[in-house]
Amino acid sequence: MKKLSVLFAAVMMFVAVGVAKAQKVASLDVASVLSVMPEKIKLDQQMKTLSDAKKAELEKKRTSAQQTFEKYQKEAATQTQQINEQRSAEMEKLQSNLQQEAMAGEKDIRDKYDAGLSPIEAKIKDAISKVAKAKGYDFIVDDTVFVYKGGPDATQDVKNQLGIK
Picture 1 (cartoon, one colour):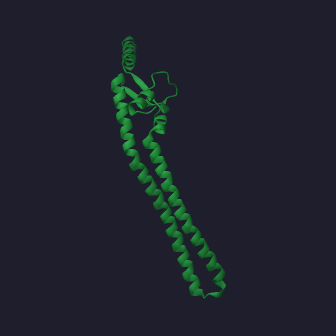
Picture 2 (cartoon, rainbow, N blue to C red; picture 1 turned 60 degrees about the vertical axis):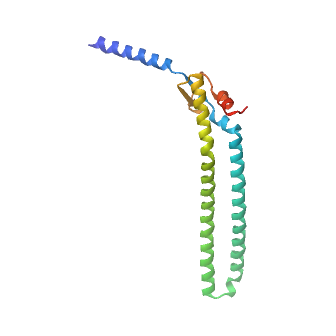
């Protein structure tokens, strides 16, 4: 019985090695492909412009709020308690609005980035599929998952498929 289990284990190892060798695996540096894609470069520039505009707008509002706060602090001694309480509530509401606007701006940027990235990802996946079929690869794996990489690299083939040098 022991010999049978050893024989079974040996046969399974042989079959597993045979199956593994029959599959062609290539690696792909997705980050390097993305970094040279004109669509991705354009998307990054658009997101930077949008982000800078939103930051500038928010900073302008923060500066205005800070000036109002400083004015209210200077005038506090000469105002009634009721006016000071109203101003305090106004400043708290303004601060809350600024925080909400900042979060909404970040969400807007993320949503636009994700929407812009979807067609780029689809284009890369299509190119990867075409390269895999043309070269006979069973798998193309992002090279960041490898500890050691000695097999074929499909990065240049995918770049060529996309028309990128």
